[in-house]
Image 1: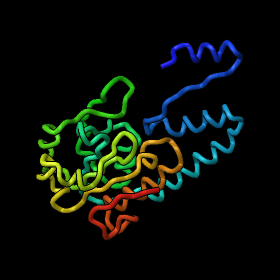
Image 2: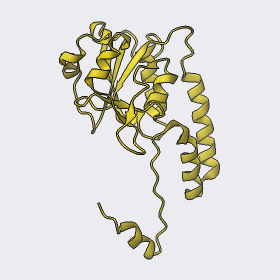
Image 3: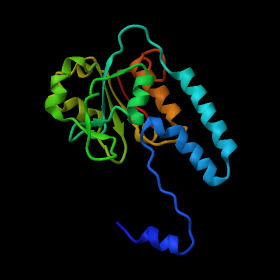
Length: 205
């Protein structure tokens, strides 16, 4: 939007750092780099180690088959996330299997992935759980999801296993991802988290 902004700031003596962290493999390095820039390397390292330990505690370790999950990033276009994204990383840690592992990104460097109704319908028997990201890029109600005709044959709809989870808990590189992991674990593994005993629920921070 402002191509000369960075150059203008740099010419004014302002140091610049701009980085997008949306892939699971980049998360810890991103925090350590932030700590270095802020002069808080030890604190950043401690935070990353604490986060890693909590992930190990919260992660589901199910034996046998993992239930198939479709994670919706944008309802209208039936978009999902790439396999290397943070949301899918959480889905896997929570004990699920991403049925859209073959999704292609919408563009270079993107984690939002095109899927479309036709491909989803091909995988329909595998979709035992549907989780929709709730936030600025996907403002859709549970009712709208349940009433969509093309979703009617999904086992997730028939069994009432349709959920929403706030975008800030699954897509942003902050320690709040732990809360997102805990919520998703309850959705995917009933009895293991806050979604216990529910069929359809919207979680608000």
